[in-house]
Length: 205
Image 1 (tube, rainbow, N blue to C red):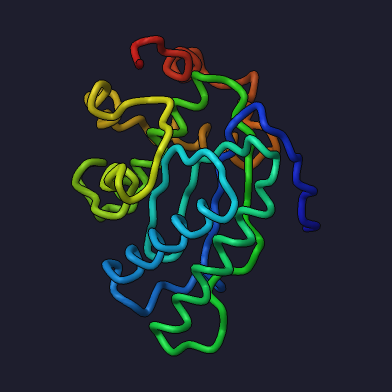
Image 2: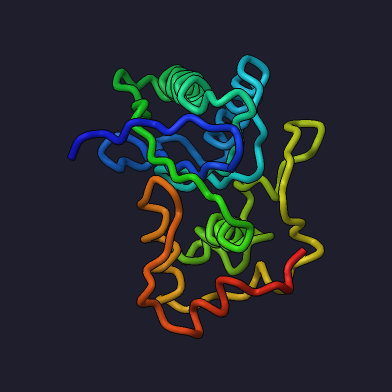
């Protein structure tokens, strides 16, 4: 399948997904990989300013929610994946790079979708059965101090903790996953009314 041409824009956030080569797990401990990832994000953010909203690092991939005031997602992602790969190679003594510049992106142009994607990102470790809740997972932006990286979330976890920690059913998560496979997040007009209602809940701040 040919690679999608990036839609450069500065109006809406992007959801970005990047995985390691061949889906290989990191050979280093997650604590070390997390430190290298944070260093890479910080250095990339300083070199190419963007608005970082949230992120989660998993065993062989990461999710990132980001806005680009300068319409330069490609430049930021190239810098981030290059720096992260360099650091991983240096610390693991591996020759092959771990991240190519082939990331997947989706524009999120509605708040109701955006809020659910926040929850989808933070619940990745729960769906992978490696964490009981969002807050206890140590490798997400929920654990990042403002002194480390300046984040600009649209949605506050502490204010909406019950909603963040509510686990949607498998069908609902599949709707989110499918929507994130598009250039612009969208849902089928054939989804059930309960899922549609959940997607458009107004009880988050």
